[in-house]
Image (cartoon, rainbow, N blue to C red; front, side, top):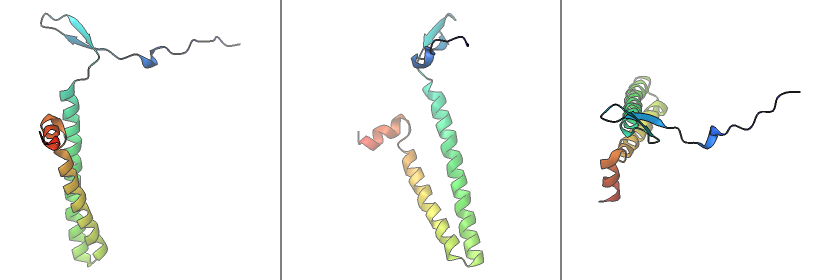
Length: 103
């Protein structure tokens, strides 16, 4: 019937990222670029914290305007979540990792 294909062999192979040396020759490397991932991490953390701060303000303001203890409680819950997120940010990056281990 159909032609049988061998199983995909590349599933367990490492992907090589080409880098260049000073002369411009291509050097294969399987290491990701840490500064790139740190930039992505920082963007996500800052965006999330910004969103949380806006959410805190809106929830507290709306709760106080409407006289709703539920919305005010939601706002304070977001304050706690934001504080927790900020404290977790201290552990990201090389300096934060040393600081959390007590070195």
